[in-house]
Length: 304
Length: 304
Image 1 (cartoon, one colour):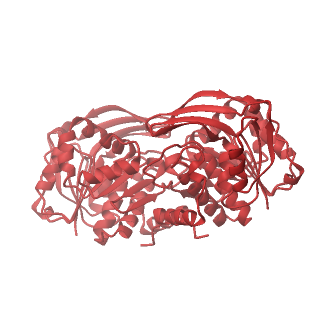
Image 2 (cartoon, rainbow over the protein chains, first blue to last red; image 1 turned 180 degrees about the vertical axis):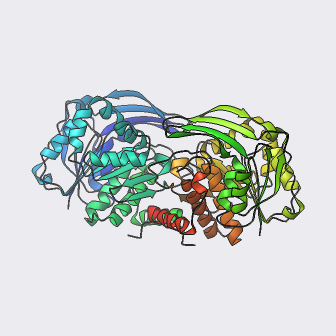
């Protein structure tokens, strides 16, 4: 069916209480693409990098059957860089620096071979750019979009305009509350549904994920990991697994949306075990299926 | 089998964004007993009230088949009073006043007919009093205990001594972290298991409940209520439903512990819809079964 992924690719320098990496592969589109690549192929990546983006990263993406026709390489520029440090409990982090570099003037050009993608996953970028992407593709079956506090606060009008064209909005708890000014997550989700998306996914970190539609609420647990090394990209890995599963199965029933939520949670659980995208470099389908079944065990109970 | 409940009975004055009640029936033992009474009878209540405790409350408890032989009525004293005000999002509250009154010198005397109770649920009271209760009963099959930040900070030695005799510790997220100095809830639960209780239940409010044993983790969702009027007593209603179901079934298998968690969550979900214990005044078994099945719907997904 084709899954188009648009977002950022970055070099992340990350410190957590459990280690540090310098200029490691990161960015929303990177985590989404890699996670999705375990379910569907090719994943069509639209992003921008600089001349400093090394061949081994290209090789890794090609090995994962990610189509790089839409990856703009600006030879004279430098790749987006971000540095962050997590606090002791991993729930908070400080941004140490943000160098937009080539990402500053990113124009998401969609190669003609990508325009018929039935599934589109928009990473957390300027809602105006997200909108441009949607204007440049041919009626996708499902548009999944992410956003963040920054856009909610600074471009509310543009975001609200773009959200009208999203089928699924993926946000975290605080973003859902900020967007709707509603402390109850269920009420917040219902309000978001009135803004456009008919499916709302609220990521709650260690508390799992809520999927809300007009008729359904589904509550997925988080996998009870004892050792989380780096939470960076967990939300994007979730979105990638979710989108990848839907693109693979092309089934938008509520039952299959629930499965997609669990596959998303599965990829996120692998993602956070290692730094950067290393937790998703070489998973096997058996590992993914085992983790899926562990999620069933974790939340299953029977009739009395 | 007999379920013994020991804790506080209070008159609560509560303000939330959705209303206010004055001197309404409250206290940990009250919420626990009323919730448990939907599963097992008689519930044996040990607590203390003053001469101001009105006959209609006595009648309500008797109607719910709660055995009041252990309810000390100190005619010359006044019942414990507490006042609190919740913030806009209901996750925070300020205590406005605490008048211990007859509760200040509470000595949990266990009537001889109560000493053989197979199930004991200790509400959040001084760990020294909890210990006294356990010294005064004959080898219960299961001891369920609650505690709070105040005791963790002010009587850590006494609490740790009492915890050695608990089978189940029921705490909320922040208490689990404070008790173990461990930000990961799973690791915190595993540490608590090394302190005595072989079953740890971590209440996460709107995010549901974790049940952790040496071999199992079970994650139960919270019921997605749009209208919560008063969160007071939700944790105790949970403990009461949990304990009541176990006392009724006398089955300590992991599968039945999971059911008990869902019945606890069910009672908590009814509790918070109204002020004081009003949400649990006249539930029917059909309502409880329907809510249990809604919990199944909420968290169920199938194999791909």
